[in-house]
Image (cartoon, rainbow, N blue to C red; front, side, top):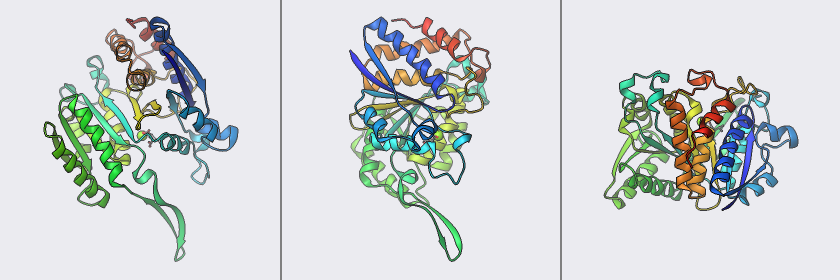
Length: 354
Ligand code: IPM
Ligand code: MG
């Protein structure tokens, strides 16, 4: 299989963790006779430094022409001035929107060997296996109007929470489809007691629920959901929610796995290339030190194989290699060990059974 992958390393630890994921993919390619071709493009602060914009049209065109996109992270203190006209995060949003990636899948399944690395009680962590399906191209991130003006001499800032019915319907369909392949439960998270967008969200979730009789649908307010994530996390199977709620809840959920550095994500649209990135940020405090945890990026490469290339065996091989490495005590600093990014990657590669 000939596969063209665009690598958007981005900022901070992005280059370190994406090169770890590329190493793993190259190993898979050699062992299974797939030809993976990698090309790099700039995004985020790295792109701002070069061209003054966080993501160029040319980089977007390269992504559109690819089979899949692998991303590291964007952002950092150098570009963090609140008054700045361009911000690294705009690059990521332009990429998601530009590729039509409305569904962000964030699987959460802690490793038994890492239970002690989580601040939560071990008995709470048993049996956790859920996927957050986060709507990714709507809501507060993109709604218009957005910006600042002056009203009666006061500065006013506005963001708009906006959802069209079709945006909710398509993400719900995906959530139910995923639930059908799993434990057949969908928890739809909203704030329907306050927000109009959430009332539409709930209405559409309910009508999709009626079309999927074999699947249990529960509605949960986002404040309750944030509490249940740490008091009864094993009760979730598919958790589907809008953009901002999903952003917040997935950082919270990552604590269950012991470290933000462990979690991968896949962003998908209707056909076209998918985007694969760890959920962690650019971690400027440890950037360039070679100590970042590569697992989130490596597991994102597994999701790339699964969702964009339908190479399920190879995807599973990566996931099992990571699990074996963790079981054997291989640990980066964030999960209580001493291994550097490259050493951890080598440990995982050694355990790939292809
Ligand atoms: C994430 C990140 C991004 C988001 C930022 C970097 C724009 O926090 O992917 O969760 O808010 O979506
Ligand atoms: Mg986030």
